[in-house]
Image (cartoon, rainbow, N blue to C red; front, side, top):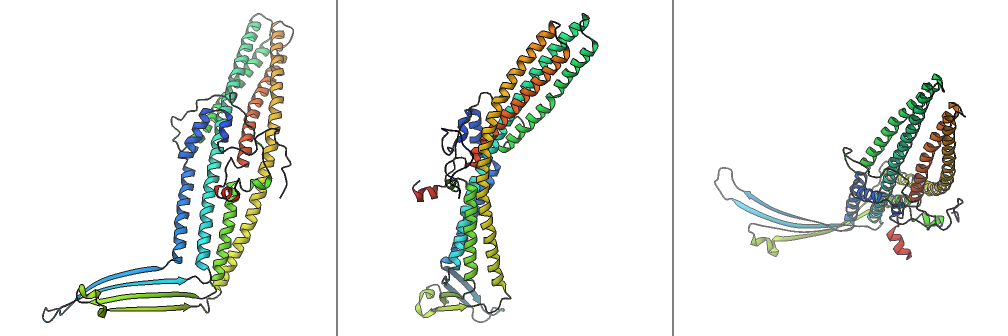
Length: 436
């Protein structure tokens, strides 16, 4: 177990996310969408139904540890078919109980396995909740990012149309060539052609967001139109060992392993004989009152020992199967732990790198804007040819569009980091046991 994460977190950032980590982005609309998703998500509903199934299986697995009691009441009428002779009515009442003595712990192991599977289902539900939360936040940011890029594309189109008008004026005055006019018209068409794909992507992202919320897509809208007004929450990881109790997917893998270990114990107990104790009380009489007279009642008490002598290797095969299954889950648990460490390390580096890249891109946009404005002024004055303006336009548009994408990538990286750190989830049972 590593003592710390190698990637450095932002200094002064809070250690471990809060349960409502998304509120740090400062978007009331996002808060409302996530509240709705956690209440209406179809994936979460299915996960909750799986928990109910696991609870029922646990109750079924615990039943053999208790006695089984059966009651039987009967009535019979007998006599000649032709109606001659005597007819008789007999009433019967019996109660029987049986109990399997769990000497070798097979039934207890089955119950332990079912309870561990129930815990795994609950952890799986929390994993689904974290996945849905992260997916809604990421998709919401994607919608806003695409709207930012659309706004940038429209702004650049307006700039290109303004330059086109200037070129047309200079062509009419004989100060510019038809080649300049054709070049600028090509730029305008290129800028216009960039709008439909971005609009299509924005629409698709909204449809995905509606699906994540459990809504039909028709009429679904997002009010916000830019990432610019959102905050950038900070978070830092604690000790790597603590991550094992803060990620529900790791706890799910651990619970699966516990269930497999209980299955091994149950498979081994199957090699020993089964001991069953039974008792029965029955009464048979011709009248209802006679059923409760001791002379008409009888009892039976017994014990049985059952041992399989030859089963063709079925029990040995069952034990080998459970051992192999446990070995598989040991490796799966180790893989989930290492994958969690990788997620955190990758997200930490990604958040820092995206932040630095955004700052550099913002400076690049500022300088590209200055260059474009100067090129346009010099072109108006006749001190520069159109090629300089075209090059400045292209550089400005590329820098602005890249800045929009990098800003979205930074928000995505922050969501990934919060998810990698468990999204503020805590195992309440573990926390209560450790006093944490």
